[in-house]
Image (cartoon, rainbow, N blue to C red; front, side):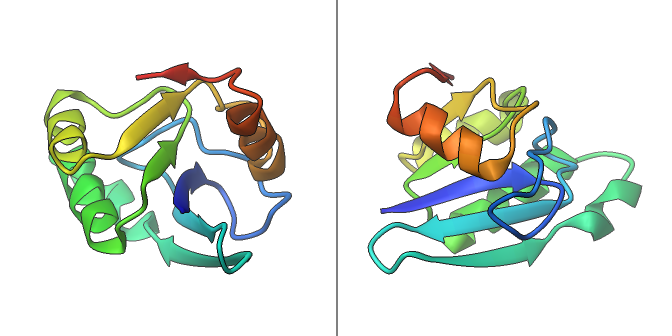
Length: 112
């Protein structure tokens, strides 16, 4: 299974980015292969509108099964992700990626 995280870095000990649309990075953890890949999302910070749907589109292309984030995506982005069948978990904004992953595994994050 692939799990996407909205993060401020590209490592296991990076802090989560509580934002969805303007998250600095999308970090993808492939549980089956035990490896990370990432997408640099920082260019979207200058977009006046549509950051959420653009980030959702990128996630759709990266094809994770689960998204773990802080506050969750806005309405348009959430619609895109839910139609793609992605499970979204929120409440990880003040954690490291590793802590967010552990919280997900322990079922202590809220499903969006």
